[in-house]
Amino acid sequence: MAVLGRKPARRIVAAVVLLAALFSLNAVRRGLNKNSRTSLTRDVGAQLVSKWTLENSNGRTRTNGRGNQAQSSNNFKSPEQACSAYYDALYAAEPSWWNDYRENTAPSSDVAHEYEAENLKLIFERIRLFEACQKGNALPAAQIADLDARMFPFIRPGTTATFTSGDLSKSYENGAVPVVSGAPQDSFKFSFDPETSFVDNWKRLCLKSTGSNSRGIVMSFPDVHVSLVIRLLKVLDYQGNQLPIQIIHKGDLALESQRKISQSLPASQKLWFVNVKPMLDERFAMDFHSYRNKWLAAIFSTFQEIVFVDADVVPILPLQSYFTFEEYTSSGALFFKDRSFAHKFDFPYCVPELQSLQATPFEAKYFDHPRAIDKQLMVSMKPTPEHNIIQSLFVGHQRHHMDSGLFVLNKSKHMYALLAGIFLNLAPKLSRCTHGDKESLWLAFLLTNHEYRFHSIPASALGKPDESNEVCSIQVGHTNPDGSLLWFNGGFKFCKFSDGIDYDWNAYKKDELHDRFSSIEVARDFYESMISIEKAVVPDVSVNPWGGGFTDLCIGYTYCAKTSPGAGVTFTFSAEEQASFKEIGKIWMDATEESVPYFSS
Image (cartoon, rainbow, N blue to C red; front, top):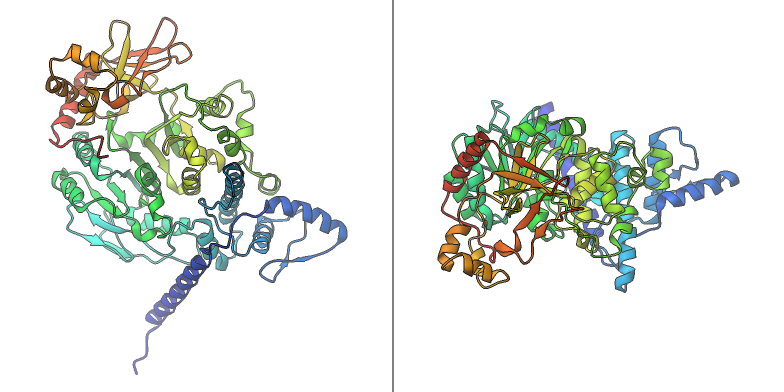
């Protein structure tokens, strides 16, 4: 019998340990799926504070749910003691606890709101404490894999995505990961370390795959938006983009769609298709659909710093420039404002439930976690854009604040905020409070005490104003304080939907259309034409609220903005700027003959 060398023997032992850990985690996951079990317990932190006070006065000790003597001090000397006591109490209170955003055993609708709020409160406390304990190396290594499985049950432990090159010639799966950083090797085999968290494992994978300067563009979209992606890629090529691109999907992007993108991909653009389906727990995979796939794109992309862009975004400023913005360099998270609609929350429970997710007294006492919302609601002599938005949402109950068509993140700083956002956006009741994913993103940062910044200038309407200085368009523009255009969404056409006129011709504004155009085909040509960007109008909504919307043109996607003396700002673009817009617009318009239907999307 041949004798194995030390390295092969060690590798075999490591493989056995990893397989055993994964088998154990899968057993835990199966056990946590029992219908008879709930994750809802009383506030563990509050229980601890109360019990410690009583036990200290009586001089008693306790035993935790794992048979160990639990901490019995109300004044911890280290984070390790506080973390150990918290998780000891959590396991003792509910040995089968886990974070399930869908869980709801309430018998009535009214009670359901209260149940979900309490459940999410516990989940957010656990996430904040897990991050704090992890960063402080205050958790036993042997416990981390089990905690990971309970904290983020939608992630399958120890798995990686399937990577396919942009030309569809190479594919890597089952732990094989491509190197896209320019290193000599083509790929490497990645194994998860069961004694470190998913977040730390993923950071290690990103570093090895994309290098220390790990920056890239990330996208996620349905098949119906492929033509928009082709147009965007042509614009990126024109701008000399050198950032690698990852298109994230969960097996729901058709191979034909990938072929279309591959065939039209400019040679200068380095692109990968990343199928993250292997990384998702099958019980939760179907919860990620439509805009919710953005969470998968942001989390599972292998860049540490990302610019996420929607398919219909048109960048005027090259995307790599956003990494130099002061808002980003100071915080690691740059967001942009949406149109300032006067639209309040549809449900009375939205604001109270969000406020209930702030740091608990236990966190404040032992981890110095602030109650971020309460802090921002205090009067400030120098209010920031973030302060104003928080005031608008939690005092004014306004629900529209962020345009998530483009955002910039340093994931090495903010992965836990992204993971927390999934619980906000997928919780059945709370998800009804916001439109899509956009508010959940910045709220997750706020509620996990992660730093973020909003670009200071509100969104604008782009186009050619009428005699009343009003601009109506589907495009949402984003400008610098000096009036220069950064980016916009909605594409370059008057209406991005190919069947928009088929609906509008006999809808709310049919009389206007029939008076203006001699036939539906003439109107169709107008709908398909390229817009002229002469001005950006940022209204003062307290004087001139946004108009248009539901009953307006392009199936209700057209919105109107105007200014009046002393109210609002109009930026007029120079002849050189307009010529540049037209050049980018021509590239965008000529990129493909395919279009986007609305009623099949």
